[in-house]
Length: 411
Image (cartoon, rainbow, N blue to C red):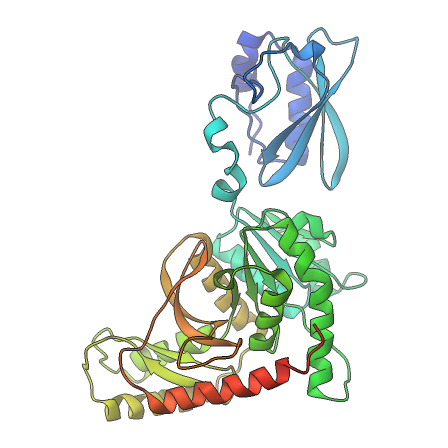
């Protein structure tokens, strides 16, 4: 944003600000090019009026989702008193000259919305993990323009290829950090980390992922207590369950990416490749990622016969099986989910959710089911109105095997 010195001087004219303020705000703009300033009247929350020159303390304010603290600082060279400002992750300090009656606290104009300012205005997303999938998610979310601020937590040692390139080419609104606190007040936190290296067994690999999550999930949950946790780490059903247990978040705000990509591909194949007329009926891939996933048709009216649905599903699934899931394609799917979450689109996705109570499943396992997603995560699960014995049997079989594996993990 171009810094308008003359416009700022006109705004500050009634306060008799010195030129020092304009110069210092210009410095702020250099470090934060999207900095926006406003001229409001400030009062204390207890409605008391105090002169700034007699005030000592700090004033919390927000800039692009980042907490700034303005601290009273004495300076005999300035007639109007000064505030020094600092922000997490930035050691630079600047002095702003303020008029004697500008009290530091919540603005009268914005006080009603102050408490929810971060939650309602800043679309901040955090991606956890700097591997190929983490970079793919970052690029896809950035390309869709979903986030006002996007934090990529790189937890690896040193700087690897993708991280270095992101640093070099400086994507707008993207911050790369190793500090978990930079994720604070995120709308969505996306987990992409996976264990690497040789292992004796599949259980060992999963356990190493669990160990990583044990160190991360509670801390990140504390920094963003009202966020939606979106799990892309594998195996997604197990790791979503682990995230739910470690975070203590309500189940509707812990979601795995599940079969969203498969579902979107299947719908495209049926409509655009097979050219099938489904009269608006949607079909989803549900259940467990991998060979045990099944298809489910939506809609209450039988527009096509059950046999026709089965034949069409089988043909589409055969075409779907030859499609690999590259990091960039999973990243696009993640961006699709984030879009529905932060923009409250109320769109139906097949994602991993707590499946207990559905399809006669009695254990705490996560499976993909068609759900309506919004700012609070899952707002509704699309229930089947047709008895589907083969689908139920497949889901119950997946639930049993997942539950058995979960019982062997050390949480």
